[in-house]
Amino acid sequence: LDEPFLGLDPIDIKDLKKIILDLQRSGKTIFLNSHILSEVENLCDYLGVIHQGKCLASGKKEDLLNGVRLEDFFYQLIKGGKNE
Image (cartoon, rainbow, N blue to C red):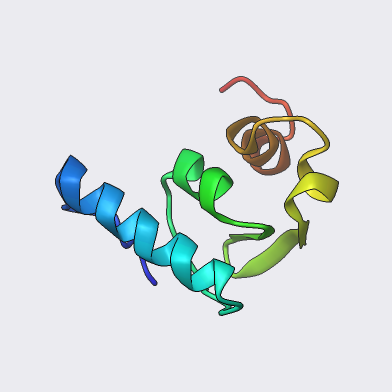
């Protein structure tokens, strides 16, 4: 799914999340690409961060994030702590 929440209203977003989670619970693998990191963090068990065509990090969510929010992990990974 490429940016599946883009352009959806809140009702459709909630319905789509339910569909994704139901598929996940049934054992299906879903590839989800999104810039809405909060949704990625809430829905995904395994993460990959791709930047400028390179995979900078991948692994189980809990192993990668280690208690940090995905937004903060992503920012640190891409910006290297620079506040620009």
